[in-house]
Amino acid sequence: MDYHSFPFVKLCRIFQDESLLKEYGISQEDWQRVKEGFLEAHPSEEETVLVDAYKAAVKSSIELNKNIAVMRYILSINKDWKPYFEAANIKYTGNAEKDSKYLQKQIQKLETKAQVFEARLKKIQEEIKESKERNENKPITTKQAYKALAGLEKAGAHIPDFETFTCGKYDAWNEVIKEANKKNG
Image (cartoon, rainbow, N blue to C red; front, top):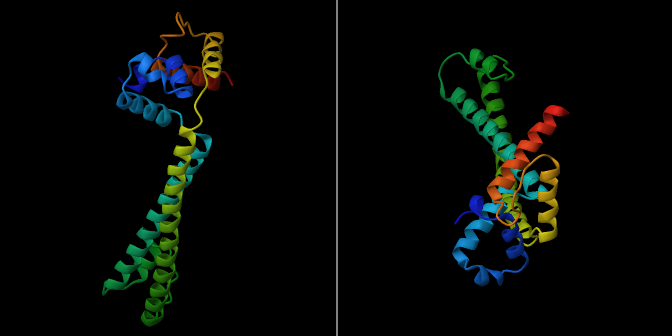
C-alpha cells in the first residue's frame, strides 16, 4: 500500500480520524507510509520557501568553498600569480608579500562567511523539520477533498467514483490542469 494507489477521500477521512484505520483494515505501518507520501507530495508553502532558502544557502556555501580552495591553491604554487589572480578576479599588485597577505585575509573572511552559512543551513534544516511536523497536524478535510475533486471535474477531469479516485490520479490531474492553465495564460 502506497500513497499513489490510496483512495484520496479515504486518506482525508483518516487524516480527520485515525481511529478509522481499524475500520478500513489498514495497519499503522501502511498508514504511516501513505501519510509520508502525502506530506512529501504536498509540502506546505512554508516548507517550500524553507527548502528554496536551503538550496540557495547550499549554492552560496559551495561558491564560498570553491573560492577558498582557489585562493589556497594560488598560495601553494611557486609560479607567477598574475594569471591566477586574473582568472579568479582577485586584485593583483605584483608584490608577493602584499598579495599573499591579501589572499590570507580574503580566505579568513570567506571561512568566516562559510561558518555563518553552515550555521544558517543547520537552522534551516531544523525549521524544515518543524514545518513538516506542523504540516502533518493540518490534514485536509473530507469537505476540502470533495471540493477539490469537484474542481477537477469542472476543469475537465472525468471522475466516475470519488470514493475510489486515487491520490496518484488526483496529483496527476492537478498537474495536467496546472500545465494547461500555464499554456492558456
